[in-house]
Image 1 (cartoon, rainbow, N blue to C red):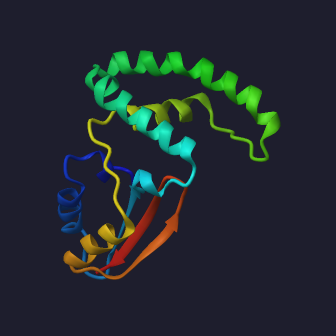
Image 2: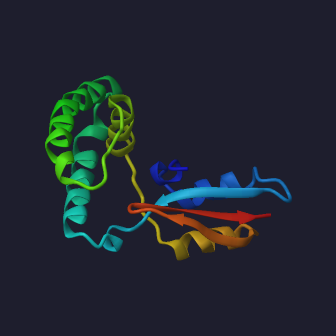
Length: 148
């Protein structure tokens, strides 16, 4: 879950992964939705900005410098959370380690592909999977599975 999006070719990665699935086995992947699918303009704007930062700055830094950069982002993140949480219905309870991992997952990869559900279904079918179905949808992505 979440690995194929960071490969140079998610489709090729899926092809290699599918060869590891035995007969009567199930394969599950998680992918990001295309940005156009985000209904909230603020989400799309933020994702475009994050994508620019990732492509031009963070993915080019050595991982140790990235970690320092992400550590510097934690205090403003928690300050914003402390200020905003009283006004939200849903409380976010991620720890600093979980948020740090989120920064790494989002800003470190050289690639961050986004695919449609139909594209992913086609990958499964091309690799001989049956009973292909979107398992669940989230705000930024979706999980999809298929059976051999």
